[in-house]
Image (tube, rainbow, N blue to C red; front, side, top):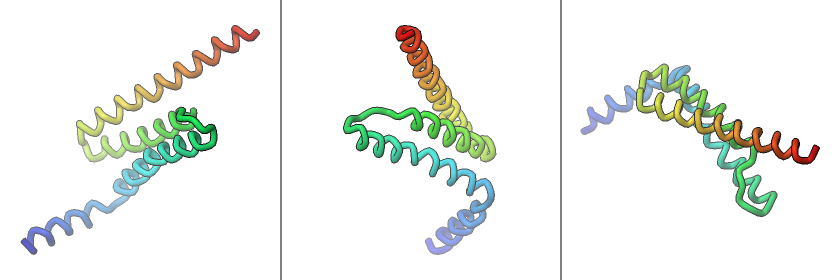
Length: 106
C-alpha cells in the first residue's frame, strides 16, 4: 500500500508543470464567475446573471479548453467546447435583446 501511495505521489509531482498551472488558472477563472454572480445578486438584491458572468465563463472555458487539448482528454475537450457555445449564444441573445430595446426607444 505504501509503495502504491509513493508511486501515485510521484505521478502527481510529475504532473505539476506549466500546463498544470494553465489548468489551475482556468479553474480559478471559471470558478470566479460564481463569486461575481453572488456579489452581483447581493448588490441588486435579486438573483440575476450579470454580463461579466458570461465573459468570465468564456475566459475560463477557453483556458480550460487549451488545457484539455494539451492533455488530449476528449471528454474534457467536448465538455469545454460545448460550454463555450452556450456562453457565446447567451451573449448573442443579450446583445440582440439590447439592440431591439434600443430600436424601440429610438
